[in-house]
Length: 125
Image 1: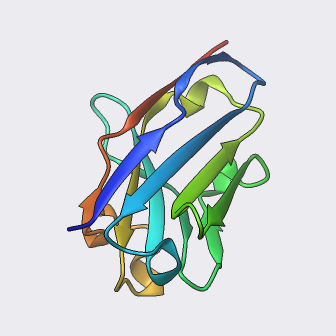
Image 2: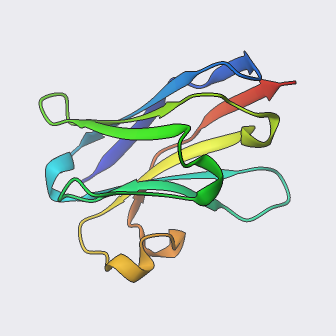
């Protein structure tokens, strides 16, 4: 059974940084694709970033240059470093994983098997 647990959210001011963590159990992070999504009330879940088992990373245009994914295989954890946060980044952030996901579907939340419980990020302007 694969489980994911996010942590690191909080309330920050615009321009600040946060690092979100996604700890996996039941599958090695090096053998799966891990995605980050975010959601605000009344809107669909939005793709933010993904890290493939190969180490290749993908980002939505709005976070390129500000957010960075990394992976610690020993801790079996994926990190999302978020810099220069903006009010538009306010959302609940979820991590998800799927060991078998084709590249063209990496931004599609329905393709991810397992999800964490989410962590709130609030950026005040």
